[in-house]
Amino acid sequence: MSRGVNEETGNRDVPRPNVVLLSLLMATLVAWSGLDAVSVAPNRIVPGQGHAAWEAAGWPVFLISLAPLLAVLALAWRPQRCRLRWALGLVVAMLAALPAWLALAAARLVEADLPQARMGVSAGVWVALFLLLLALIELRTRLALSRTLGWSLLLVPLASFAAWLTFGLEPLALRQEFLARRDGFIAAIVEHLLLVGAAVGVSLVLGVALALAMRRWARCRMLGFAVLNFLQTIPSLALFGLLLAPLAWLGAHVEWLGALGVSGIGAAPALLALVGYSLLPMVRNTFVALDEVDPGVIDAARGMGMSRGQVFRQVRLPLAAPVILEGIRITTVQAIGLTAVAALIGAGGLGTFIFQGLGQAAMDMVLLGALPILVMALLADALLGALTDLTRQGEAT
Image (cartoon, rainbow, N blue to C red; front, side):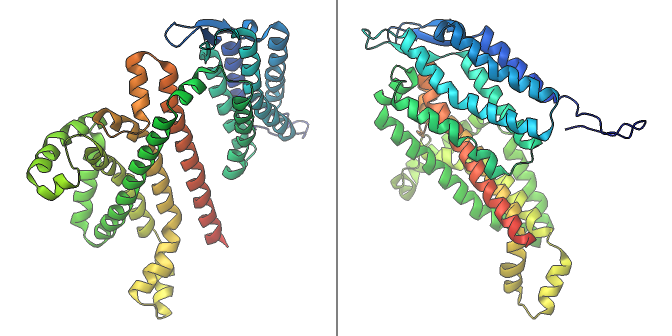
């Protein structure tokens, strides 16, 4: 909120319009009104026919759906704090009502005598959903809500989606893709999480060891950061390709590596590449966190008779924990996204659905792989961010 004091009258000026919120809501209004909201196809092979929002659920429902958008636009024009709270409530309500609107559209458009018929979500709904989520973030920032409270606001739309997915959204194409590949989907999630967990775990151990070595030896610091920065410049697909030949040779000529399943394709090159990409944020955050602990605190701990190990475990490491956790958060979110690319070299994971869907021009299969990756990244960001906030609050008290 931008507000000031009138120098002539001494009265407070009214807040200036929130340009960000106005732009987001205007774009939402255009997308919702001008783009196809859903598409309906008699089966998986035939391309679907697009329907705009007013065709899908009827003009009365369409006009009703515009009311909260226009209300938030009006509230954003004079964004006092109480108005922003109302706007936040309306944005959450619109997100929660979206699954109900999709269920109504499915009931109107999908013929009951065509059991293979399916309804896909089109650009209008995706763009509106994305812009409303951005509006939610903008309102959370303006109202200075905590990260935990901000994420908890999403529980209402998620609960609404889960409820309507069970009752009313049976023709949804994404749901039908999931039901057809339920076992493979669960296996892909497990593979994805195992790869991410292994990459983050290995990079955490290596990162802490490298950061400690860099603090002790200056040459190690210069060489280490140079190598890690160079690794970040290599595109992920190129790095997978570079690892293929040496790992295939090692798997064929070193017996115990071959017994472990190391080869040019599969999990081994994927894990190595993920660890390589994860090391820079992990090492940099750990190094900075340990190096920037107040020297006065360290001197005080030594003056109390603490040994070198006690100073590290009881003083330096707890004070550095929030920044180290930030490094783990960044590394985890980055690894969740990069693991999708590893499916190209046979490492499995949710990226398998993405690339199979692209090959078959089946966008619902692409979404079946992409949406869980997005959810995983958001959950990791929220949980690790909340943990970081807790450690910072512990330091403050």
